[in-house]
Length: 474
Ligand SMILES: Nc1ncnc2c1ncn2[C@@H]1O[C@H](COP(=O)(O)OP(=O)(O)OP(=O)(O)O)[C@@H](O)[C@H]1O
Ligand SMILES: [Mg+2]
Image (cartoon, rainbow, N blue to C red):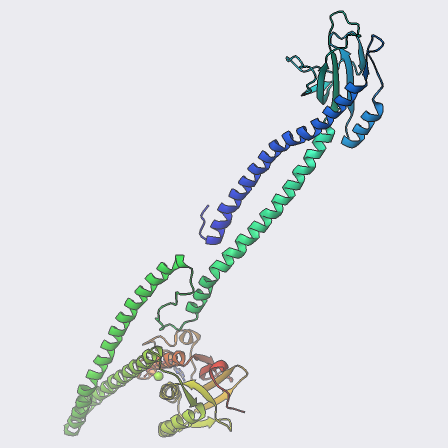
């Protein structure tokens, strides 16, 4: 059996151990109980023996006694068992009571001292007390033998009593055991709760959050593990920062030579004399444009990561009016949409909608979504930027009636350098939606892509859960 949970380890080891110890203690109590019950019941037998001894009469020269029936009857009633007695001379010649009541084996009775023993009487197990009395001189016996008095009692009374006590003990032990299992289970749950809470917090973290895991609230036993994970994460974060830094620096360094190249190509075009030369230079210019766009997007991503680092270092979010952001972005892209004769519009509520976030980042995210819509939708398409508030979300969205995205492209959107079906026909770097997604996470929001209502086109949105947006709409 593989015990891969602390709780089952506790239960599977502790419970059998407790069962074993309580079984053992029950068995030992059973043994001790037998002695205690015998001592108590034997005392009553000894009393009966004494009272018979007082009633034995040898005045007549023979053995006589007042029959002790009342006393025996009372005893039978009190102990719930059958009682037998016998008074006889040691030689067995005179005898009163139950004949052949067995004598103790092997030992000679001491005068006046009762002896207790177990024996069988016609198949019935009995506990017997026997005592010898010095015979009176008047008693006529050939060998001057003593008088033997025996009182025997069947075992039912003792057995029933013992059974009662044992059942009581068993009940008590079972109750304690159940309580014990309950306490262990509750204890295990309580002890593991901080672990579960920490796992939940880690699961809800954004992908880029490599902050150390809080260890103060965790059980001491798991802290070394968490410390090791923290050290590992710190190393990883340092490596990721270095890589990011390298990427940012490279894109920055590339920008100047690319701009210079662009100017040179422009100049070369003005000098080109043949159509072929012009064509080649056009192709070079197109390539250059794409590369410049790529470096721009990479720099944008770098700036977004920078902002995320600053937030982690304690920079706080600001209040951003999404309606204003939407107006600004639409203004910037109006000319581009006009050249494609697209119906580019805004759908805003009458009042500002404020969220907690970073303004220029949200602006950047919306720019990427709008630029995609303008780029991938054909001429005369309709593109609408809107801001709305539902019960639990504030939604900043761009809806178009262009080619839309395939489900598999939507599922993979947000992966860097991933381009979709529509993207292949256009120039682009495949970073736009990755930037949108990263920005959404930084602003405690998420990006959503879905087919547009009429089954044609795309709705791309950034959704802010309402708890992060202080009210303002009403
Ligand atoms: N409005 C849209 N309609 C149809 N397809 C879209 C739309 N927006 C995005 N896509 C698809 O998603 C892919 C990824 O978009 P993303 O913005 O990340 O990269 P890109 O536009 O190709 O490059 P860039 O980094 O220059 O934005 C695109 O290649 C395109 O196939
Ligand atoms: Mg794009």
